[in-house]
Length: 463
Image (cartoon, rainbow, N blue to C red; front, side, top):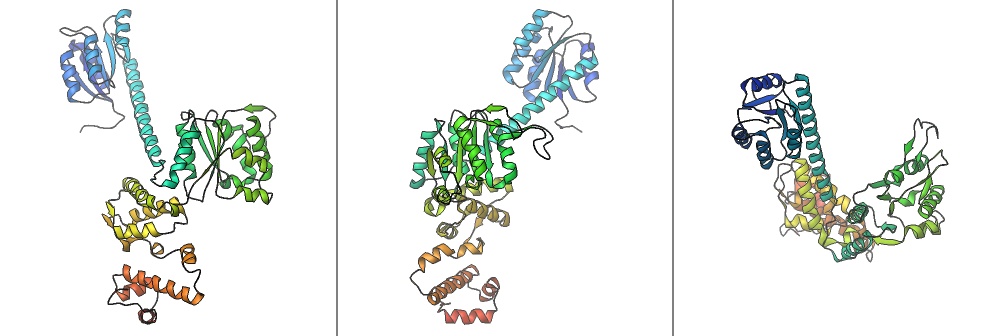
């Protein structure tokens, strides 16, 4: 049976001398898949028909010699590795072979160990090439995932700012509610900047314990504290030449704020447990969902640090102010999760889109992304999402929207309106089947019947 394992080399031996050809096949055939031909023309035709990792090619052959055959092979497929074989050790032939794209050159008589070692090196190289290709595709996918999707006018000023500040080294402060895409904007600034080939290092200040964050940012020396068994470089040092993104910067303690301020002023720092000064070149982007001015007023955030960070302010609007973007974002996330999770959803009904577009989205884009992922997972056998497939909490207005709508109503009237809307939604989703609606509402059917009558819900006209 043919072995298609990526660890088995597919080798083509090309030699007009029968003894040499058979010797090479014998050396290679135990651990590799070997094909042999007697001349250059046959080799070229074979390569056009099959895929090979490696070609062992005799230099001296009739009709078409090894150097010309090598050129034709490379012309057809630059990725095939070719090792030239000669009966004599001639420097001119070796040089010509390497210049024409040969991987290596060796002479007869053959040393089996040397040949096998070369084959292993070729296979290691090809495995690395495949890994690099895979990683590049992963990076490309990640870049696509990090794209900012918007047609909203409120985001146009953000895009303009990104374009303007990317070419500079100025500090940037991104503000906005949680889930609005602050890290995406930071990555966009980095990717458009001259620093794009250098690291982008994102640090969530709220996720790191206060006693460890100084070491995380600046690094530490061996023995600097309990558990510091070796020297460790910090995120600033690692990001040299690139960009550091400090998310949730409002959570930093005042002591660390002072050290961060010194770094921003001098662009130098000391590792924890060391007096050695380390200078780095990084671009600082910070983000917060809190009002730093309010924290300054409460003396919980340094005003001088705020001034240093807030050179270029970028404020992100919440998703509820970008309703026109919701269908675009839904389609973007739907395509991504279909691909990643094996979903088959092709569309979402206009009614369902209407519900999603009218929802308040207190968790912003992150909440919308999570909802779409849930829909793909739970509706894996469906091609179309209907309104009834949406999570029930999306089918009623959230607290903020209700508070605005009912602010001029009394408590009794507001409660009546909420209850009526809630039951109507349950009936709509249940296709006006009262038994199903009662189960969804977790009440007895008789209770639902009484509520329908008391709230003036018209079952016949479905209003």
